[in-house]
Image 1 (cartoon, helix red, strand yellow):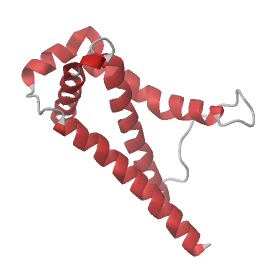
Image 2 (cartoon, one colour):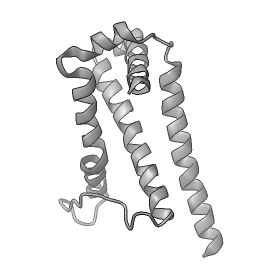
Image 3 (cartoon, rainbow, N blue to C red):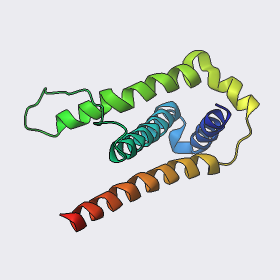
Length: 139
């Protein structure tokens, strides 16, 4: 949990330090951190699926707009993104807990958050690229 809180503090202080984020820094930090966490969970599930540890990738099926990709967005949102939004809200923003965390953990000028965000994104995209290349090679 310590690394989780340090990363959040770094993300919050970096977002608040930028003039264009003065009003919406809470929304931006929630979106970026929750999306990154959701992608990490999806990556873990992909790996577990490929290792045949789990049989399928969990998702809440949504069929509001048949034949469109909008349903896939809503399915991802409710299956992966929303749970992290709620978790992060209650662990970080509920009753302004972030103010206590800011006093407790040092600011690292956004470097810890950037490493987490870009590292997660690169690993996820790299895994997908390798999976696609392997699938093309064997088919």
